[in-house]
Amino acid sequence: MMRYEIPQLETERLILREHREDDIAAEIAFYATDASQFVGGPKSPEDTWRYISMMMGHWALRGFGFWALEDKDTGTYQGRVGLWYPHGWREREIGWILMPSATGKGYATEAAQAARAHAYDVLGWETAISQIAVTNHASKAVAKRLGAVMEETYDAGDAYSEIEVWRHPIPADLVNGGMEAYA
Amino acid sequence: MSLALNIPVIETERLRLRSHREDDLDMIADFFADDRSAFVGGPKDRAESWRVISGALGHWALRGYGMWLVADKATDAPIGGVGFLNPEGWDEAELGWHVFNGHEGKGYAYEAAAAAKSYGAEHFGIPAPISYIAPANTRSVALATRLGATYERDGEVLGNACHIYRHSKAEAA
Image (cartoon, rainbow over all chains, first blue to last red; front, side, top):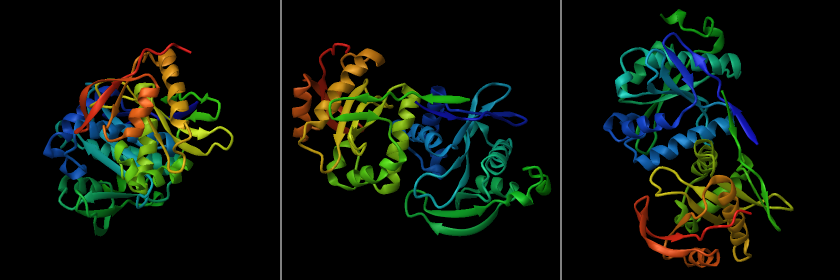
């Protein structure tokens, strides 16, 4: 039997945990709308389900992946944050996607900071990127708050079009894995 | 938390049904590079084929059943895939199969599908699955018939018109 660990992480306001069936319903609703345009959407319910199941298989194959974000107070699904390196990927990436109702609260920054600390402190990553659609200004602001810097731009040649590659600070440049230096 | 991927191993006379592994990628990418894979969602490039593997594993995590990699029992080399699919958009659990390039015509799909079918009846509560089959896929129609399935109705899966075959109730092994 294959067994894989999805460690549960906590931030001030969020719990990072494994995905459950209910979360997929929220993702299906999200991917049905243009709000998903920066992250590969819109997608059909069928494609969204397969995408989430593929994300869970990524945990089994890589030992890391995307966590579901749960609001500590309400228990509701806020989106996902994760560590991503499927076959053929440019390099190890930190990603974040919030449901529309969860934006504007600093959740992506809070969760990505925890994911990055896990990558650096537990998994031993020495660097990480985040790939962001050129027109996704909210996500670029998160990258900036995390201390990442824009490194290059490339044409993804698919639905994503122009992508910016943001480089995160290396572990030695972070204090306690956090972002105190950038606050 | 710890998630168990409880993917059982089943052995038949010539085959081992087991979990997909990353080192199966060469054979899977080769299969999905070919137009033959159009019946199962192809063609796909190598990176997309990796996602077939991770998606197969994720299906087991979400549903408790899924697709096995069919391997040669003696060498463990990949021969194809078989098992139960029930992602979003499916009417109910489907018994599906495919055979990789160079392994057709040896009865492997029948041997694997018959074993999967009785395992599903006994352990997954799927006594009489359906199979979605493109009418042009005569090889699959023949196999479904040999497994005791019969045409039930016209259907659609992922926007493609297809025939829905219904398997007879399997005796739990």
